[in-house]
Image 1: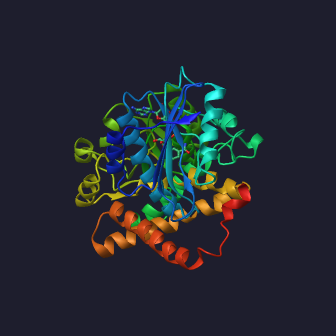
Image 2 (image 1 turned 135 degrees about the vertical axis):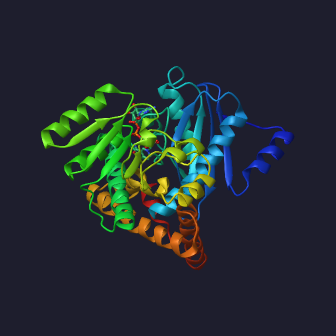
Length: 379
Ligand code: NAD
């Protein structure tokens, strides 16, 4: 196993691309075919944490850009969730349907271990909990593994709960009450998170419009609604953006808030789990101009992150669910600041996270020579 030695020219380009990133590790193991990049963006709040994505990237540049962008996002997500981690991410260059082997993930685990506690990782797009059972044989720095291995299991449970807290906080600002009932919600995506959100909204007495390409998921939620005496209407295609409802709940994929969809939206708020909902940050301004409240996605969908971060202390579901409830107060603080400073909610969320990091930086400089980091208990 050896670390890729880039040429001098490549090194200059990579360092130029790093901006404020602290460290990039290129991993190459010819015996297993592993080619991966680990990026550590910021460790002010603790060791870097971020999932490991596996994709058949076409070029090394594409993989590098993805890992740099995603690891920076994790710094903000960890700060918003108030977990003792910084931002990091890993990408494995390969086809998840063809190139996965236990040996490849063990090799990846060895590279993670070589960082000696600076980077913790787990599943992301293209990887599963089962893959990380192999990686966990080589390092203690794996999170999000199955319950049978000491992990917290299905992280979509706290993620969905976080969306519910996000909806309550947003309803409080828009409608003056955090009650979820007697409102109409449009849920895009009835997968692991969206389905659970739909169930909880129906149980609260809400009316739903749902959109999913998976017919089975739609039929299942309609059946559930019938049992509860609730109302679920199916919408298809782009109709999902123009429904006359109160809140849009995107739980499928990112980029859905863009020039075309903003014109169509009739809702008063957008609150969902999907990552990177705004195609560009300036779409936050367009929503604000239209009087639509946007709940920054990385605050709303932090429940899963809170769960995996909790594994550091020995997973405890009660603690995870209690901490997930702080999404409600964090969002209210962001909304208040956005209004006071007349900025978008995403700008306010970013400032909120940067302030948390600045505050911790000051504490770190005071304590850094005496404090034994909590995460050492894991080693
Ligand atoms: P999932 O894959 O289980 O569900 C996605 C659902 O969207 C599926 O039911 C799929 O059929 C549906 N879908 C796909 N294309 C669609 C389309 N064109 N129109 C309508 N529906 C469509 O994913 P998930 O785990 O529920 O996550 C949902 C979103 O939340 C993703 O963006 C994910 O990145 C984000 N997220 C999830 C978690 C988590 O804990 N699972 C945590 C943070 C963020």
